[in-house]
Image 1 (cartoon, rainbow, N blue to C red):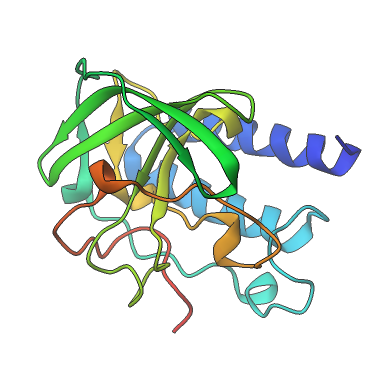
Image 2 (image 1 turned 90 degrees about the vertical axis):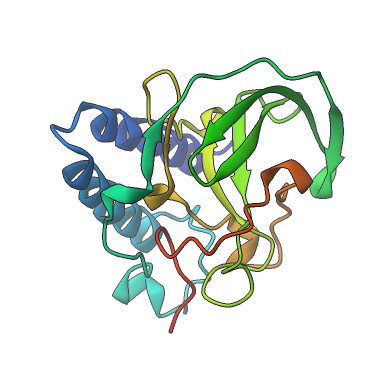
Length: 189
């Protein structure tokens, strides 16, 4: 691991700690948005190519909408093993019953472990990355706290959405919502 990657991971962990400590979700979202913009603009580990205009303009993220936030328990679900693109192994450890549909919660068995909740919705390929976005990835520190806070305003594109040199685990069938989720990170307009 390089010093730059160590710095990237520490910054992400610190960013999500600040998000969890924020006095309200809208303030947390603004911290998250501006923190990610700074990280993507300045870090040598940014998945954005050096000449990508989003390094200057920031990542397109929809305005915060509290209607897309809930806190739900992690319910038991029968274990299911998956090996996804990039060779990442996962085991389903639970189910999150959200107002928008159920989402499988996965434990990454490779790549340093952690809770992982990818989401694909009807905006995929239109206003968001075609293979889906990530909500939680505790291996990288992306955790909103609570029992499990599901706040779709914090959906973000995986690194492979920015640069094909990255390989990313994508949303399996249990993480597809049959609705359009207009919040979170968007594709450039």
